[in-house]
Image (cartoon, rainbow, N blue to C red):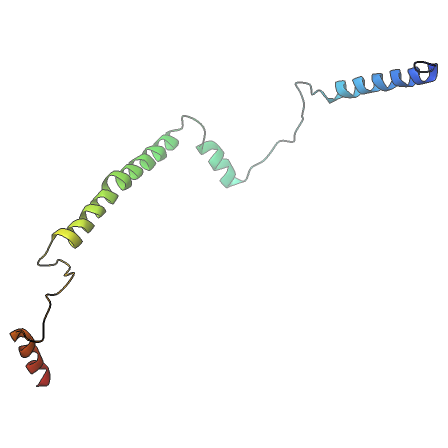
Length: 120
């Protein structure tokens, strides 16, 4: 009793043929898929035309973007850092930031003068 019966072999052969036909049907021809023509709105149509490679406006916008990035990264941020350092760490007068006042002790003449002024 080895192997399949005649009916089982016929059924397996038919299944094999059906699988092959199904796999062959899954292959797309060069004309598929057939999609309906898409009508973009005015904004989408503008961006599709604008983003075409080699367009003049695209080049101009990219150049402006590069220039702006250069100015921010190479000019504006370093200038701000230098300004901050000079304002808070180097410059003392006339518009420098005073980080601490000199200490006034109770026995100093300045303390006596201040206390007299406050009492008036």
